[in-house]
Amino acid sequence: MSRSPRRRIGPFRLLALLCGLSLALVTAGCGLFGDSGPQDTVDAYVKAWTSGDDAGAAARTDAPEAAKSVLAGARGALKPASITATVGQVRTAGQRSSASVDVAWDLGQDRRWQYLTQLDLLPAPNTDTGWRIHWVPGVLAPDLQTGQSLALRTDTPDPAPVTDRNGSPLLVATKVVTILLDRRTAGDLNAVAGSLARALGPIDRDITQQSIVDGATKTPDGQGYTVAVLRDTDYQGVRAAIYDLPGVRFASSSRLLAPDAGFASQVLPAVRTAVAAQVNGKPGWSVDAVDGSGATQKTLTQQPETPGTTVQTSLDRTIQAAAEDAVNALPQQVAIVAVQPSTGDVLAVAQNAAADTAGPIALTGRYPPGSTFKIVTASAALQNLGVTNTTPEPCPGTTSIGGRVVPNENQFVLGTVPLTTAFAQSCNTTFATLAAQLGADALPTAGLQLGFGADYTVPALTTVTGNVPPAADLVQRAEDGFGQGDVVATPFGMALVTATVARGAPVVPQLIRGRQTETVKAATAPNPAALDQLRPMMRAVVTDGTAKGLRGSGEVFGKTGTAEYSVNGTNRAHGWFVGYRGDLAFSVLIVDGGSSGPAVTIAQKFLAALPR
Image (cartoon, rainbow, N blue to C red; front, side, top):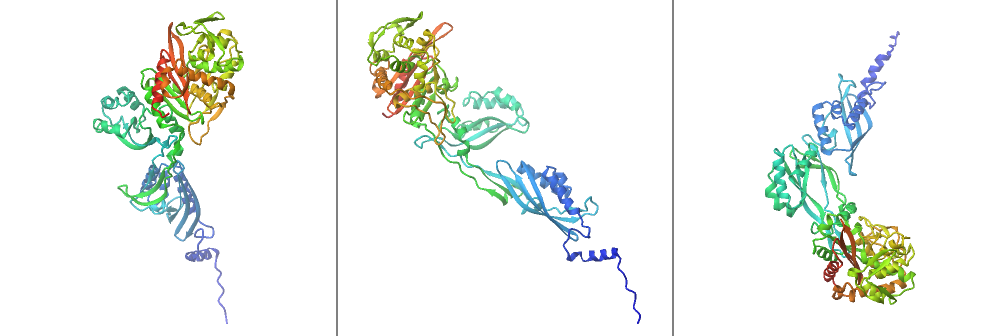
């Protein structure tokens, strides 16, 4: 029997036979040598898309125009800070291939959207890689359907309130309307600005036709110039006059606002800024698949909002309101600061509109303290000169120290009287003489014992207490002794001085609960024996001295001050009263008040509004 010769299968035919079995096998490509086309296509798509080249990414699909429209639309809607994508396994079976891709969108503000999507690929023989991604909206994100697009939604919680020490609201969420002007669509910009100024000027005097034109002109194209942000109640009053103006649009939102615009204006705006992260919470957000009308068809990812938490301050709304009413009683610049001696809590900081034009004078305004500084001089004398509050001291109408003539007001003469009487009647000649007998550092040392010259970083506030430099010069020391010379003080600093006298220990100011004040330069401990002598002297100022107008205001301890200064050769004076009643220490300053009399009247008005 003869056998047919055995046919040998050549290598190329064997390869063809193996390829014929490829439908039953999952390999990296058709062929023992693999096919990198799908991998190269996916890599090129991802690289282009994540770098911001939507057109380049779309070119790697089988529907470039449709893909480009969806990809670019998503980027415009979500405005990502970045997009990252990591290609997972690429699997090829015959004429089809697929790839898994991990995608992460950084949407800013700590918002991150991550998901896994799958890309299907089909052969494309006439292309550089031989493959193209089959385009469907799900390539961009799972569950995105044809005719849908992406939208980023945000849900901002109303800010939590800021309250006073008793829980009464000081700042609450209030509806506001932002008025925006787009100069490109306004037509006659000057005419529109004029109409806005006529409507808004009575609400805010800084809004003028020229300010609006200047602001709108400097605003980049495509952005609206913020003309004003109004409480909704104010907006409703001007709505009819501005709603239909060309180029003007409106946006509603919620902001933390005080009961009225001027309430605690030197404190609450700074507090609002300092506690913004705590009270604002964290907005919720979602990425939604929306239809052509913008209606949500499916939420693809979401993060609920996190409400803010309430912030409590040391302010007392009743005391603040009393201070506000008192400072508004005069046309001059008036400021009041109130502090609780037992805790250091800042209870009130008030100043009128006239004072606001000069800045935060209640907290940082430096003025000669006049005779209120005799509190410090008396403390220094009681500690260093062997005197008591009953020691007889001369009080002539004038005295000469180192050639400097020191007069009493209107050169009044008391003769030789107890130190308490000289203090109560505010005898300059007595205290200039005492200061001249002190050492160069005695006044700064006594001042720091009472918090004068101490320095604090109070969260949300900038504060100054005061300064009296060492004085080796006899005349300078004498002038400092009755609050002239080189001494400067703030209402805030003098409130701390009287608070320290009341407490008998250093007082560290506090404003925001849970945020401790940093002591930059600490007050030293006051001398208890000196304070025991000083307090009756301060009480005598009210019962028998220069502040008798406060006799009916309860058990008030204090000191008046008339701080002289000169303007173009004309003598002028600031008026002061500083003191305490119970656990309330305060200072009153009237800039250019002429004398201490009006300050005593303001103090009486302030105290009359408060329970004793």
